[in-house]
Length: 486
Image (cartoon, rainbow, N blue to C red; front, side, top):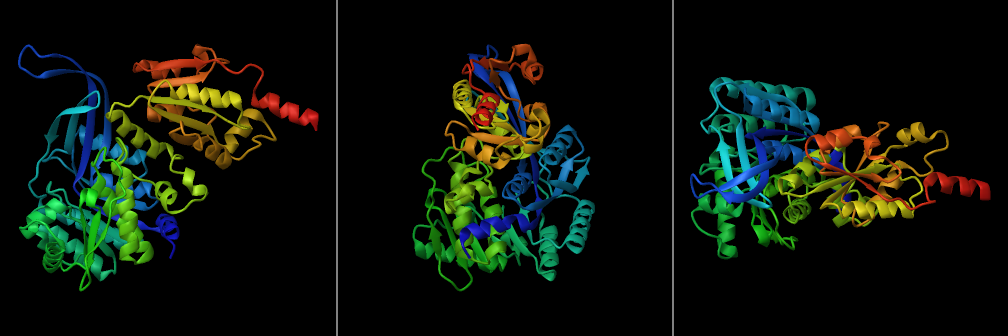
């Protein structure tokens, strides 16, 4: 099966994610002085972003790759837990499998960032195992979902924060096996026997070395390590993520294979393991091929670590690599929900976000100038584009002349445009609120006080700009000229 066909099949799959659910908080600002109380930097806060972490980031990766996802785990009955549930609703990840526990906090990792440099991380967590009561509740919810929805696969995302104890893990795997469901495990800790019966386990090199008790100096040691992992878990096969060396994999009674990393430069390894298990699981369920699935997972990891601030990869990203067709531009065209998450990650790295919007029907030199000048106002340019129905409401019958898909792909072809989102409303106010840009840009045919979203952007310190338009050029002018000439 062609790899592009495997990737396109992702949207037909349904996955349950079970594990340690976390909230990632990024607080950024500037340091201009040292505290007089102690020799520590004083961070003057300018912004904050909240993102799904842990098992929730695995769910986010699956969602961005096109799969249907249900998330199961435990969070605290606190503000962090409520915020996390709200985030999941925004990106349309089903969270009915999440249980609130008033006796433990929501695991929260708070990163303090000065400019682009992380200066501290503060963790709020309890790592003791969940109670028998909550274990039974989770298992009952999972069993009901398996019976009613028959998911294609299950991912156990263990971050050693207490959700995945040996009893629950064993019961989940046995339940899945009875129903013929594939189980992938991202393991933690020193006892891999709790994952016995899984279809595949995906430790990183450090985790595998700790379990085996020796380093992987050569291929002989690597094969011995795989045999040790398979013996402990009884898994059909295993993947070991090895950073710049790529991913090594082994299937029972087979040979060790390594797919070399395609990452040219590593910016951020955060979430790379979540990406690997997500992409591999979807690819294997679509193809039943270990080699092709590892190739896809390896490429997905390479995209993530090459990217500043994002820990997700889209189907468009993968198709851009494996297939040179119209999908090649779709890695820029995202839903509002996924775009919101990606922009939050970029902001957490101190990137300045610029937003502009339009119909862009009959793209012309005025549009080109507007977009190029807008990009110069920041680091990342996001363009909102009206859908066909929205254009028709605004411009009347006969418009648009060019479909929303073609308009989006034309704009995506510009190298200075980073992301695109279509919106069906008459104006982009909802999209603006979702991404909270640092700069809002329109043409000078708008007065500042008439720019939609101005008050909202200025309320948190953002700026609104108007860029001089090219006189005498507009889509309406071009449409009328063409009609008159005809």
